Length: 442
Ligand code: NDP
Image (cartoon, rainbow, N blue to C red; front, side, top):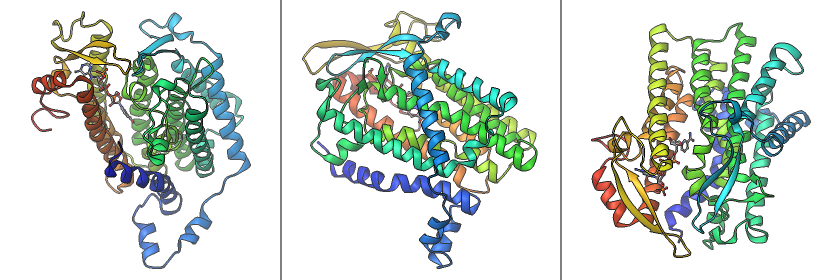
């Protein structure tokens, strides 16, 4: 059942999320990243909406060509090149892997080759930048707004296709969720794991590539633009590239783990993931680098080191917390957490076909400190990216504000779902680990 608050939020996002992305990118393009100046201009009548719109670059054949080539290249890497990284990288889990059990009791197989796609893409990027010179490394920045229109076209096309597909030829009809509310279904998705053929999985493809592979390339393009404009790359830009680069590489190194996260295990595929991965993620997660092109901040050594330490500690907490849960679940509790046997709560649940399953909730290690300490680490890292941009403008701080809202909402949403899944066992767990994100506070 869709409550009025969820429906209102969905309608708001469907109408305003594309405008929010446009506003942020336009304010950098036309107002040096000031979020206030466009509003002042509009409110005082100095400018009309049409003036801003007229100055906005339109869709170009060049951008359409670049984008089509980019997405096609990522599809080829995803579908046609089976993983070879796991054959020579010790500790890396790639190749064919199983996902979690879906509510209908299906276990999907995935071809995990994201790290390989990331490496090939970046090797080609650097080969071009330093040797072939087919195109300028500033190509992404130089076409940023025309590419935005392409990303929107793909985002809407894939979400609409996913909706039609869920009625016409669903991959697994038993895992479809119809609420009867068109807007909710369009936004949150109907099909659980839509696929084309055996291997092309919409969720895995759209979240990882083109979205996350692009993230580091976009940042590199911003760094190249700084070099072109100012003759140097600032330490803040290097920090943003390095910290976000670690986050992206971590994602691909742990792509098999990603199969066990909420995106894959619980969310259905609709506009939220389809458009979000094509537009929201590459455009808004990279705002710090974009800002630094317009405002090249050179941090003092102490500040730069402080930000680096914050980012690395945040990353460590994020990774270790996720690792502890993954290890615990993979070994069914036969492992050590912080050198000791893990503590946990036994729980059970039913799938829709009435089969009873058993599971365990970890209550030691970071999972004994708070129920989502992985989010806390993620938030510390996110704050570090923003702090690298100094305090002159609010725009680069969008990321930490957004991540705080996203992860707090996600935490509440997940707990609601876990409570419906585990019932009284979940209550025993929340009694054992009473805080969500910050021990003793929240
Ligand atoms: P989690 O990895 O925390 O997964 C939550 C699920 O884990 C629950 O639904 C439950 O699933 C299981 N679980 C919960 N508590 C326990 C426990 N104590 N022991 C064992 N299993 C438990 O959440 P996400 O998938 O949201 O996040 C994964 C990571 O991705 C996080 O670090 C997050 O910060 C990051 N992330 C980043 C985003 C970004 O945009 N940058 C967006 C979203 C997430 P089950 O039904 O199996 O019991």
